[in-house]
Image (tube, rainbow, N blue to C red):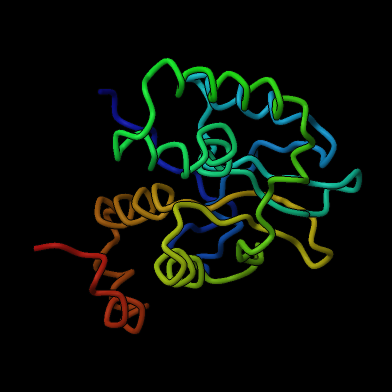
Length: 195
């Protein structure tokens, strides 16, 4: 496993300015239009090179409308009732395979707007990085869409991005100065550190 390159912060002095979401977010989350077929999202997730946790549904102006996760896709093509029936031994494997194939055939061209979630919280690009951590923890999710003042999707912040931030802070030569200048941050976020 190769080491990840350090995050490059936006702004002049990485540790002398507030740590805002816009400084650490990924700028290239996957986007689709609301009328794109579900099969496009399935193909995207099947590609091992993709990094986004979610596929964001945006309108023509880039305004966030919803999100499609792997869980929505699995629920569509492998309905919980079918999985539960199989688990209880009520369906034979050939019957399950037939039902899955039927589900794929029936749903592959459905527009993503019909299965997208609209309840995912967002975080503003200018928010402090701990705001994202709080939402990720409270909602038990792995990523948050980052929006601007008009609701346009501008990025994504994930738990991994926050961990990389912490790793960079831990390995920063001026960590002592950072702790001294931002004592309130380290006092309120001790849950991040192990040891």
